[in-house]
Amino acid sequence: MKLIELRGASKSFGKNGILQDVNIVIEEGDIWGIIGRSGSGKTTLLNLIAGFFEPTSGEVLHSFKVTEGPKSLHAHLHQIKEQIGYAPQHNSFYPKLTVMENLLHFGQLYNMPKETLQNNIKSLLQATDLVGHQNKLAEHLSGGMQKRLDIACSLVHKPRLLVLDEPTADLDPVLQKEIMNFLVQVNKQGVTLIIASHHLNLMEKVCNKVAIVHNGRVHSNGYLEEIRKPFLKDNFTISLTPGDNKEQLISMLRTLPVNKIIDRQSHIIIHPKNVIKTVTSLLAMIQDENLYLHDMDIRRPSLDEIFEIITKEKD
Image 1 (tube, helix red, strand yellow):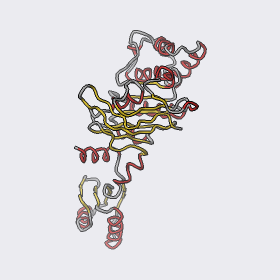
Image 2 (cartoon, helix red, strand yellow):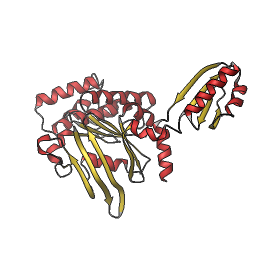
Image 3 (cartoon, one colour):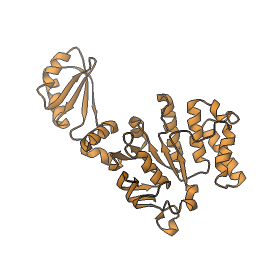
Image 4 (cartoon, one colour):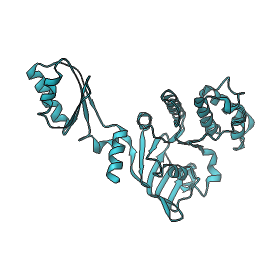
């Protein structure tokens, strides 16, 4: 089911064009990754999706109320605000309030029945591992707990769509994974997610769809596997872990159709011109020369590599 659609949406502030001609369809159950360099227009795109900004041209439509058909998101935000949650990059909770006081405050903004709000808070405290910390001041929580509290505040009214701007910023790698794993569980509970992040390795693991924003335009968007397809032919890498015959192996590799050979001491990285031809020839040569390999790994291009290729092409 379609929740939000951007049709040729552009946004300018005065004479400064920030985003141009964005076309994206957000469907229920998606986990979208919004990626781009700083200043590319990511946060502006998030604000359009959340309804905080009205497009300068084009349309941003919502279909939360199926019986009414698509309507302008920004113009009708007051009617459907309970359907959307937003977690900005910088914490939005009140540091001088306790965890419970913050959740009560943000929940009361949506005029929910008291019993419903209490049940929602109870579930969120358990889901975020903040049970036992509910009476602590928010400013006394660790960085990871503060981020979980911030996300909990954006979920307290049980929205159908949650928009997050850099939810793993300033966290160590372990906490980054914890937050992303938590968000995956949120998605499994029926919440559609829009996540902007610089941590592309994490995004690649959790997102089913991606939008690559560069210089105010969305250059690629849709299913991650569809975005990856054009880059599969020429951007595979082959990792070889040789036995005691590394020099002989490198000499053989130089006769194959490869763009680059990188000696990493313990293993060799090959950038083939044609992965199928290279692997076929390599296996035949290894068999003919009776060489031994500890390991051979063929890796498709990562989201990070695809992003680098696209943004370099568009500069």
